[in-house]
Length: 299
Image (cartoon, rainbow, N blue to C red):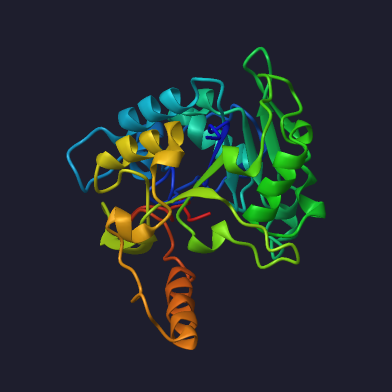
């Protein structure tokens, strides 16, 4: 059996339940950014809104920290691969605020092709050095097909450019040694010319809920948001993936009938994907009428 050597997490609605960020240019461009005085966000609020669940009685952040620490043991590397348009530094700053950054070796951001000129210059990569400090670098992502499966295949074929600062030894990788944890179903199989596929993955469930004082939010997610058993299942899968059947019906998931018209199956799958591509409601706190506009937003 091929052991897991690299675990890659999506950020929005996978590590977070929904992503709330300060609308501040320095947050996207300065590593170790500090929350300014007078901000409508407190550090505690950013941690609570992004990482703590209101749907079950558990300390989700503590469970997440424990899980990441367990997964990072045994010679495995952990990384983040995100489409967050604020870039790798903003994701790092939010993880660091919650004390989650120490478990990751690199954060890679896929640039938004439709980004404004101001947002287009944000960093696409940060990696942790041998001394534990984080440094920016340019990833090769711009030369690749715009899909996570293609990017992961490139990392497997030559990981050194993706971990440039040598914080940890890079293990030998193959496609089966990489696990992707993501809430986007379309992340696991590319539409590019190579039809790249992620062989081992965990799909994080999506849902619509009323959340805190934000009102109804659609397309929420978050590992462990509704059950802390999620952490145990992912830990077991990463440690011994060959013990998990590749038949989703064996895990209790809903399946299409065994015999189904090919065209009907295609239409069904298109509907599943389309439902996950609906535009997400803005991620913002509700403000009293006398308060200044909030700068939290979904990135």
